[in-house]
Image (cartoon, rainbow, N blue to C red; front, side):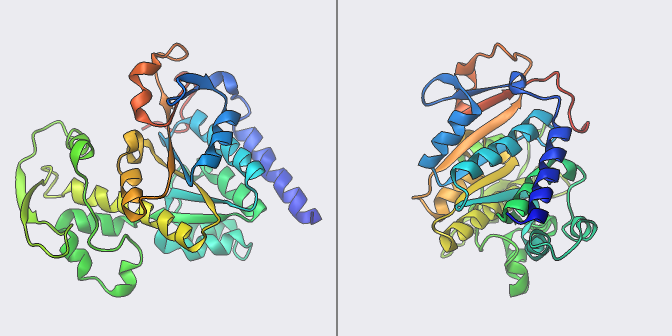
Length: 318
């Protein structure tokens, strides 16, 4: 191993240990829904061999989840060093060149964080980025830039279709499927009011002009269903596109748990792009019942449910 790379990796791991040094296996419990028992993180990583994508759903300020993410990434790398790639909701598709430049060591961190528009809690994801950089892993900038989800929510898919072709590379191909069924109901329940439906063109089908009711959500005319669906579809498409081009690869994707709980959203969209792909869904978050959970009431959330210690301070307050 190159000496400089050795010291860089050592520094990265030191930072991780410093950031999460007070956490341990006592701060979480993992439940495997298919076997009905509590397991270790090592067992979860071993099961990943049966899947194409591991989708880690988090609460963005959950300290324990961030601790587990870097640990899982390391375990997966140990098992699949030549196959592993990382995908993140926290980076938009249009900053992929910036990410690539940083990973190859061409640009400085201060330029990377500025030009990649990192989240305000980037320190929570930095250990994974630095690990990927040290190990030369691909990192997929999976999300749709907010200017497009905002446009979709305000004016619908027709407005996206009117954009220049170069702009359309930054989100899922049009038309994209919108949320339906139980996930649709879940989105509706995000609001405390009863939304009044508005009639818009159904752009989810190429050859129809059927009119269908989609709630405007009473958010200044913003259509949450349309915007959220573009978010989900774009993350799924980014993973699909990468795996189509890199058939031997295995992806660990991190997103907010709302985007993958119950196998909805990103998971549903991913199966639409390629029904043969096998995603493993992890749902992680704190619960006041920790450490004595009723797993039977939580098992619907994913293939693995991780309950984290609610007493551990959050990385930021909402």
